Image 1 (cartoon, rainbow, N blue to C red):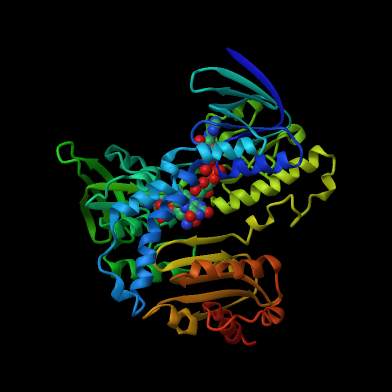
Image 2: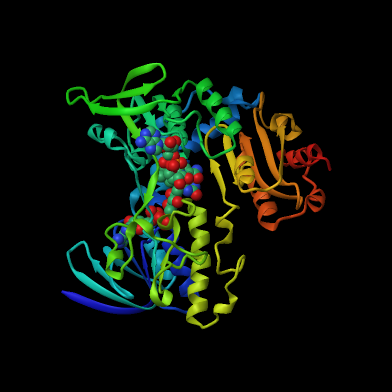
Length: 477
Ligand SMILES: Cc1cc2nc3c(=O)[nH]c(=O)nc-3n(C[C@H](O)[C@H](O)[C@H](O)COP(=O)(O)OP(=O)(O)OC[C@H]3O[C@@H](n4cnc5c(N)ncnc54)[C@H](O)[C@@H]3O)c2cc1C
Ligand SMILES: NC(=O)c1ccc[n+]([C@@H]2O[C@H](COP(=O)([O-])OP(=O)(O)OC[C@H]3O[C@@H](n4cnc5c(N)ncnc54)[C@H](O)[C@@H]3O)[C@@H](O)[C@H]2O)c1
C-alpha cells in the first residue's frame, strides 16, 4: 500500500534535535511531520545523556555526602547497584516512548514511524516497520536530524564490544570492564561502572584523558580516577580484541612504550567517538556526497538549489551535544519559518535564526567525580587563532564555598582572556559540583561582557561562584 501526504516541513529523526525543529516550525504555524525509525526521543533520552547521568548520580550523591562530617556517619553501606540500575530504568521510561509520542501529538506534530530517505527534491520516502511505503512531500523544508552512530575500531569488532547503548542499558554489573577511549563517554562510563562495582581499566591512545580540553583538566581527572582505583593506561593503543567462547571473557592486546600487553575482562567498551548518520539517507538522489554534508549557521545544507534542505544536531557534526542540537534546532526552526514567511532579512549573526554560539561558545560538562566543565576556547586554541590572550588560574579548593562543600575539596579553575578586548574567551573548571558553575562563564563569553563590568557581578558569599572574584583579582582587577 502506498500513501502520500504533503506538509510544510518534514523532519527525519525524532531525537531531541528533531523534536525541537518540529516544535519551532509548528509554533510558527507550519504543518509538520516527524519520521522516526526507533524511539521518539532519540539517543539522549534512552541510550546517552539520561541513562548515563542516571548511573552517575548515585555515586555523586554518595561521594558528596561522604565528604561532609556529620552526614558521612549516616552512611552505613556503599553504593547499591540494583536500586541504582532500577532508577536508571525508570528515568528512561523502561525504553518506552509513550510519553514523548503524547508530547508530539499534543504539540500538533504528525508522527510517521519508519526509515526515511530522500528520493528527490523535497521528497521523502518512508518504509514503515510493516513494509508500507509512505511518500511525503515538503512545501518548504526537509530537516535531517538523524543524529550520529558509534565508531567502533575494526580490531575491536571480533570481541563484540559494548557500545554506548549497551554501556548505558546493561542490567548486570560485569566484574571487570576494559574501556577503550579517553574522551567524555569513556571517562563518564568508566567512572559509572567502577562505582557500580566493576574493576575498570582504561586504554587511552593519547597522552592524557579529555584531549581538546585544557591539559590540567585531563590530568586532574586522571589523578582522581586513578586514586579511586581505575587502572588508566595512556599512550596505549588497542591492537586486537577477541572473546573466548568458553568463558565469555574478552582479551585485548595493546601496544605501548612498555611493549605489548594483554588485558582480560568480562566486558569491553568501545567509547571511541561517533560519526554523523548520513548514510542511507538518499543524499545521492539530490547530488550530495553523504561524507561531505556542509551547513551554514542556520543549518541550511550548502549546494542545494532553493535551499530547502537542512541538517541539524549531531548529523552536521558541529557540536555533538544535546543542548547544542536543541539550540541549532531552535535557530533552524526560526530560519525555516522566516524564509517561509519571506522575512529572510531577519537572519544575521547572533539573531534567533543562527547557531552562532556553535563556533566559540560551546559549554560542556563531564559528569565524573570531580566534574569537568568548560566553555569557549582553550588557551591553546585561542593562541592558535592568533588572538592575544592571557590565561589566569586559581585553585577552586581555596574558595570558602568549596571548604564548606566538602572536606579536602579538590578543584581548579582557569579563564582565558582576550587581552586586547578585555573579554572572556573561555573557562575551564574542575571540581565536585563544578558543572553548575559553568553557565555564568557561558553568559560572559556569549555576551562578551567587558571584564571591567564583570567585576560588578558580585558572587554571593559563601558560594563557589566566588571563584570569579578570585580569577578577576588574579587577572589584575
Ligand atoms: C554515552 C553518551 C552520553 C552522552 N551524554 C551527553 C550529555 O550528558 N549531555 C549532552 O549534551 N550530550 C550528551 N551526549 C550526546 C547526545 O546524546 C547527542 O548529542 C544527542 O543525542 C544528539 O541528538 P540528535 O537528535 O541530533 O540525534 P539522536 O538523538 O541520535 O536522534 C536521531 C534520531 O534519528 C533517528 N533516525 C536516524 N536515521 C533515520 C532515518 N533514516 N529515518 C528515520 N529515523 C532516523 C534515530 O533513530 C534517532 O532517534 C552523549 C552521548 C553519548 C553517546
Ligand atoms: N557529558 C557529555 O556532554 C557527553 C558525555 C558522553 C558523550 N558525549 C558526546 O558524545 C560524543 C561521543 O563521545 P566519545 O567520548 O565517544 O567521543 P570523543 O571523540 O570525545 O572521544 C573518543 C576517544 O576515543 C579515542 N579513539 C578513537 N579512535 C580510537 C581507536 N581506534 N583506538 C583507540 N582509541 C580511539 C580518541 O582518542 C578519544 O579519546 C562526543 O561528541 C561527546 O561530546 C557528551
